[in-house]
Image (tube, rainbow, N blue to C red; front, top):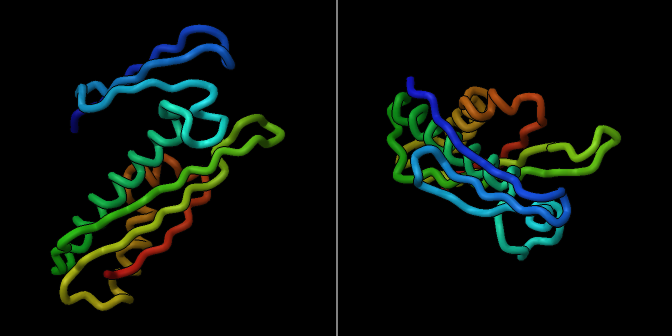
Length: 143
C-alpha cells in the first residue's frame, strides 16, 4: 500500500501567525490560522479538525460502500458528514468526540442490515481505527 503525505508551514506566533497546507497529491491546498481554528465559523481558512473530518467522512463512506457491496448490496451512494469537536480541557485544546452522520441509497437492503454494516464500519475503517482514542458516535439511515 502506498504512503500518503501532506505538508504544512506555519509563520509567526499562534494568534497573529498563519499557515499554508497542501496534500502530497496536489489535490487540495489552503490556509489556516488561529482565527479559522479557534474562533467563530465564517473566518476564511481551514483548520486541522476540518481536515480530519473530511478524511474520516471519506474513509467511512468508502469502507461502508465496500462492506455493503461485499455483502451483496451494491450502494448507489453513501454520504457521510463528520463533525470533529475541539474543546479546551485541563490538558489544553483537545479533540473530545467525533460525530458521523451517514445516509445511504442501497437498493434491496433492510434497514437493520444497513445499520449493522455502518456500526461495523465505524469500528473498522482505517481512519476510525486511527482516531479510536476519541469517542465516535454514529447516526446512519437509509434514504
